[in-house]
Length: 224
Image (cartoon, rainbow, N blue to C red):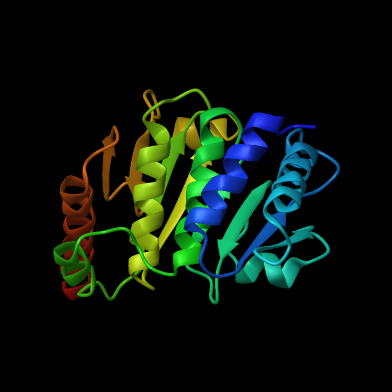
């Protein structure tokens, strides 16, 4: 059993208070060549058992066998967890959401169940202008205290716009990506493969500033 009795009680309480609409979790996993895949499957199975299948629907897919589905969801790494509601909001977790990152998973599910982001009206107005794809990558580790806040902030921006996607990536499980984007400290946030990047759990306004700056730069480059 991965989830202790105390954790199970806390999960039940928070889901009874905050959960709104059904959420589907799609896990892309495989038995061979993936150390954490089985643990991810077990963890999510236990979470569904605690929360209830009326709230959480859980599916396991193998990218090799479900190639078209993996392509549809842009899955190129395992394990990848997709959290979706009545549509795909572009919310992903790549790796095992263990340790402090378990709260990122839980908060992500709860926010998707509400079908709306936890962002200010002013932010939502500014996000509405975005009309080209913005990808937010948030590099995290399971022992980082500031990482869940940065990850959930990225998820909220993905919920706010069909053009924004948010991938939370376990840096230790994806060392090639961590090296590529020079992840020394976490959380490290990378927008559109390095158009903008910053370190730390920034407040909403600062996070928004980087997104708008990325959008304006991409827009300018597209017009040249």
